[in-house]
Image 1 (cartoon, rainbow, N blue to C red):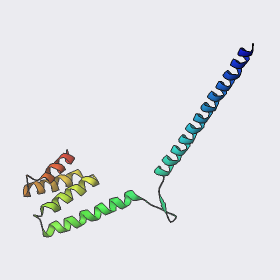
Image 2 (tube, helix red, strand yellow):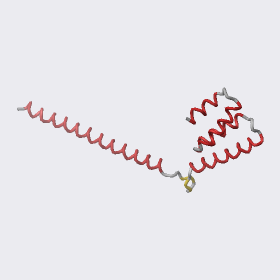
Image 3 (tube, helix red, strand yellow):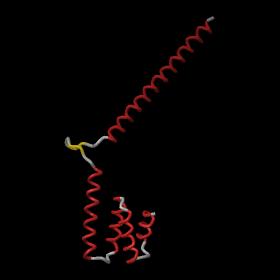
Image 4 (cartoon, rainbow, N blue to C red):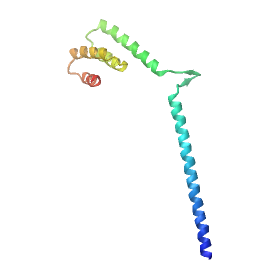
Length: 126
């Protein structure tokens, strides 16, 4: 009789430990999900610097357009400069203008057909 009472007490303690472990793991899972959802929301929202929302994609686009204009003006004065054509092809690929990128690539390939930069641009165009 005493052994069965001890077994009941030990099984209750064991069940209680299981319940505590289960409760703690559920709380930890909920905490992880809460933190993850907060990080996703902050990642997807616009960043604020000194109270002003930033738009990084617009700045990148404007910067690429300015670089494109610079290299086009540069190439008007130096039409045989290989690296300028490579740079212009890369910028146009980044902007998504495939026709302009192909034109710049063709010009660069005429100037220096065996360059490794030509192969890199060629792989990006395809």
